[in-house]
Length: 270
Image (cartoon, rainbow, N blue to C red; front, side, top):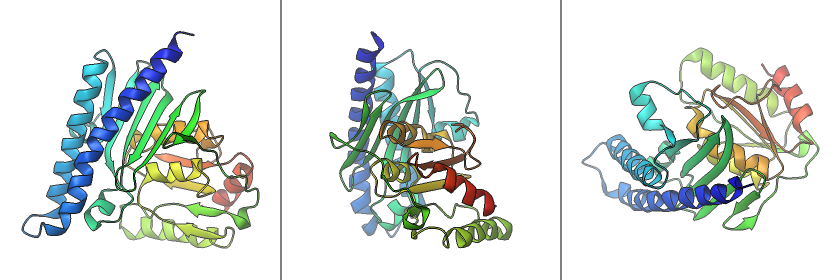
């Protein structure tokens, strides 16, 4: 299959783009502490934008015929139309709030879909120097070493990751915290790290056992991580238990042993 060669080439392109953008984030990450006179949010959007420009320019240079969807660009154009064409889906800086606070869970997420299927994934945390990669059918890696999901089969011994989300209206917050409240009786403990892409990678390398999130930004949060989870032997699905839809803003992930029980408690916690 000739596609194999091109897939490893696509992976190399994505890794190179992520590493170049990582330098910008690393610089900005350690500078933020000294920028009092300027709105921190301004700084972040500048870093965001600079990273996205760098990544897209590099990818376009290497693969001019491919399509592109990115957090900043789509937010600006208001469209996320995913076609069967090879499409790069990029979050130039996932974990913006972490970035502002100097909390080291920030990353660049790059995913490539072919025929709407996530096929190549790269998630790079330049502060902790962790590079997660996955290619359809080729396994998942952290800094070049193979990774796999946990073998935990009991919910009660599982570590759950989720996020509080960005909305602060009472009904959303109540729904979110009530759900967490009921889940805390079913699992060992809970983590909120502030990055959807890194939460998926946590599942892939077995740091966490369960993850769900609803209402995150868009396909750029999950396109890279979804490949990495699957290639690490995990599964990505809708919190209802249905098939995962990359455009739905609903995701759950775990090892295969926990899926049924996890979906069940997620349904109970609705």
